[in-house]
Length: 588
Image (tube, rainbow, N blue to C red; front, side):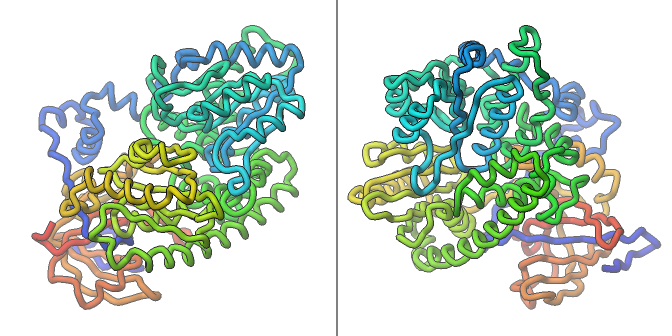
C-alpha cells in the first residue's frame, strides 16, 4: 500500500485490526504520569515513561530490572518441598529405581513432561513419561493409571501441571507403595495431598516470590534444583543438559498457558524465545517450518496463536503423546512426519471448533444479554473442543461461559470467564455436585454426574447473578496514553520492543488518537475495510480487518485505539498501527 504524505514525510503504513467482539468496549485510559517522574527518565520518550508508569515502574532502577529481568529468576530452593523432592529423586537415581513423569494433555503439561524427562535422563535416571488420554481418562491423576505404573515397576511418580488437588489419588498411590512428588501451579484446596513432596508456589508457607509460574515453569524449578545439586555432587559420570537448553520448552508452555508474563515468567519467556529462535530440537524446527514462521522473528504472539494451538490439537482430538513425541524426537524424518500430522489435526480442530461454536451460539444468542452466565450442554460437543467453545462465547457475549460434553452417565465441561468473575471460585462453591474440578480464575474444567448437571447450572447462574451487575458488563480496553498519529515513529517502536515479550499480564501498549478523519473507505476481501485516515498532520492508508460492516456507517470523525507494529511484506518493513477499537469522536 502506497501512502501519500504531506510536506515530504516518509511513507509508512497503518494497519487496523479491530476486535472481533461486537460488544462495545469501555476505554480505560491510564492516568497521566507526573512531570516529576518523566524528569527521572531524561533519555526516554515521554510515551515510554507513561507505559512504564502504567506497569508500576517509576524509577530508572525499576526500569533496568524490567528491561533486563534475569535477576528475577529465583533460587529454586526457596520453594517449599524442593529439598525433599531433589533428595528423593537423587536417591531413586542412585538405587536405579524407575521414575514416571505424569503430565497433563495441554501444551503446558506436555512441555513440562518433556522437560523433566530430558533432565532426568541426562542425569542417568530410569524414567518414562505418562500423559493421560483426555477422553478415556480425563484431567489429572487417576487410580487405574497409578496402579498400572506400580505394576510396571515404577517407584516414584512426579506430577507436572497437576496433582495438587488430587487428595484421594495421592493417598491411593501412597498406599500401594508409590512415592509421589507433586509439582503443580494450580491453587490447592484447603488440604494438601499427603505426598512425599509438594512443590507449588501457591501452597501455604511457600515463600517463593513468583506465585504465577506455569506448570512447565514449576517443572523447570525442579530441574534447576536437580542440576545445581548434581553440579556440586555428581551422581554419574555423564554430562547433563544445561538449564538454558530447556528454556525453549519453558517459553512454549508458559505462553500457551496464559499465565502473566511478568517478573520471573517474563524473564524465562524472554530467554526462552531467544532459545526457540535457535532451537536444536528437530521437532520444534519442524513445527515452526510447517506453521510457515521464520525462526529469527518468533515472538510470544507466534507461540500463543500459532505454535501452541498445534501442540494442543493433539490432546484435543487424539493423544497428547504425539505432541510429546514431536518435542522429544532426535530424528528429523520423524519430526517432519509428526509435524505434518499435527498440522492436519489442527486444521480439523479449527473446522470442528467453528461448527460446534456456531451450534452453541445458536443455543444462547437469543437470551445471552439477559443472563449472567452462559451454560450449554450437548453430546456432540467434543471434550477436546469444549474449552474453545466456551472461550468463543465469552469473547462474543462477554459473559462467563460453560460448555459441556454430555456423556452417558458423566459429563465433562470447560469454563471461561471475564475479569469480574472468578470461575474456579464459583466451581469451588459447587464442589458437592462435582466429581472433580480445577483451574484458574479465568479458566477451569470439571467432571459431573449427569443427574447433577441441572443443579450445577442453576447454582452457577445464581452465583454469577450474585457477583455480577449485568448493566455494567462490558469488555474494557486498557489504554496507555492518548497520542497523535504523528507521534508514532521508528524510535518509539524500537523503545516499545524492549518491553516485550508481550502477552497476558504484560500486554502490548495501546494508544488512542482522536478526531481522525476517514477520507476513503472500501471493502476488500469478504470482510475487511481499506481506509485512508487523516488527522491534522498526517494521512495514512489503513486496513481494518473483519470490519467490513463499518462501510457506509463511519461518522465524519473517529477515535482509534491501536498498537504500534511493524510488518514485512515483499522484503519491505513498514510501521503499522494495529487498531483494537474504533469509536465515533466524542463517544468514548
